[in-house]
Image 1 (tube, rainbow, N blue to C red):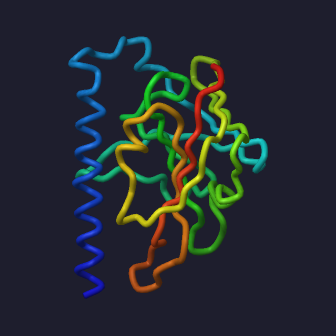
Image 2 (cartoon, rainbow, N blue to C red; image 1 turned 30 degrees about the horizontal axis):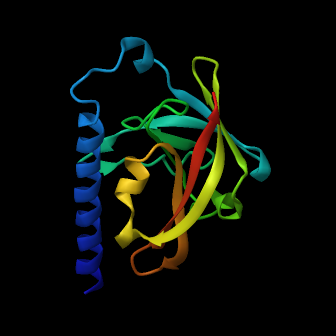
Length: 184
């Protein structure tokens, strides 16, 4: 029973993620992004209130699922390259692990974020996109708010949260930080 429930959640997550990626890619009305923008990427995330300064890597979508940063790099977060570049219009999505089998990871302290705190994302063009935290929500992975995360403007930081399911070897919830751009 637990195995079929787990597979159902994985399939549902894959379908939702695939639909959202299609929506993101078609949102521009068929217009291509300017070549100059394509070369701009976020390179680091800074969360001064939590003492976080972490490099960012690009994450893609494979087999309908968003890639995750490798567990071998617990201090690295990942920017979903099909989302907006932080500082640009659209939803910019950054993922990070809460922990590994042996130690805390980059977003371990994310549960301590509070409304009004600052998040900075350094970009490859030298600009720094500064965001203000609006809300933090912990939600079951089975009720992941894909539209709110991937289609609304702002920065989204996502990690695992809640209780750990030892049978499925995963956390039951996601912790999501929603933030609004203040300045670039």
